[in-house]
Length: 154
Image (cartoon, rainbow, N blue to C red; front, side):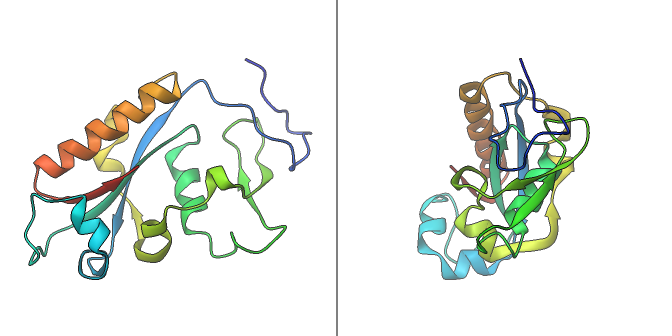
């Protein structure tokens, strides 16, 4: 599969990775209190739930890179870019697009340093296709719910 080179322009669309990853981001507990739709995704918990809340996702980027995309404060400013070396030998500046924007809950409720590699590192890379990665994301989200946590995933 052809990949972009370090000389590629930043406005070019990066080629998909042949590997996909799952990741987990811890959210502030206020997401549980303030977001009824988050509660609906977790009917196994009571309204008085006071445990950890997580966002589970899948990506063709390395989890650390995807986390940086999620939490960037400049993502909504036209022309802003982020540094990414996931598909090139040397990191390049890439534009924010609809595909790499943060999830609603992550943008508003992520904990600083909220990436939780101990919950996903042993699983990665999870797949070679997006469909397999989406299935792995759902399985990981359900595993965390089964452990009693509040979880949102796509």
